[in-house]
Image 1 (cartoon, protein in one colour):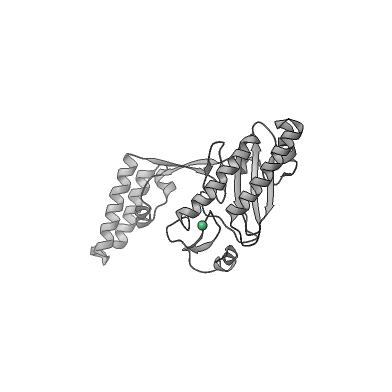
Image 2: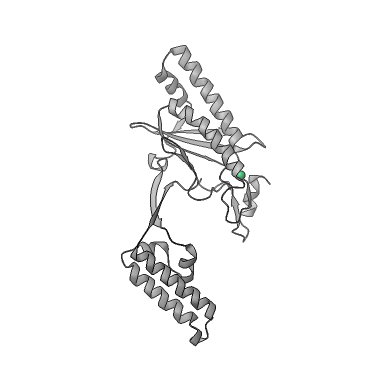
Length: 249
Ligand SMILES: [Zn+2]
């Protein structure tokens, strides 16, 4: 199945079809994020090669994403300056990782040729950056964001019909209690509710009250729909890639 299939699939009712953020193929992934560990590794290996070029170019932050037709590499250099964007046309029937390898090799060769001819790192960098476009995205769209969210089992939140932001809020205790009262009323066995569901509601309530007493947060870094380079390593997209043409990536 090619990534073009997503155009049709995105209109289907199933939400189990996801796009692998490493190869862009749409398939039934269930709870998995990638189509296989090998697929993820294949892209990470090529991103590691790209990192060498980014270091030569003195890049502070970068993002990498792709559509069926184009690779998109945004780069911010240390200090001030615009976002440099490379839009690289993809080849037919090749994986994004293969196209990325081509792009990295071609740009890398150009960098070295210019470096050897002029005997200047700076001139080599300027030469490469002249090929990029500027003004397509702002710096804030390239820098990876760090967000915190409560480390709780999603199942408990679903059972009590309460959101992650509610339990992280100021009135967390009251919110959990109110949510419990609502669901307990609905599912109480004395009111023709299911005993089994009521037990789940009660257990979710206990778990969430325990969390409110001793909150633990998880930190997530990155950007939705894009791989992000933070100056040291590549971070996977926070949420899935959207590859249908016309959708922002
Ligand atoms: Zn894949």
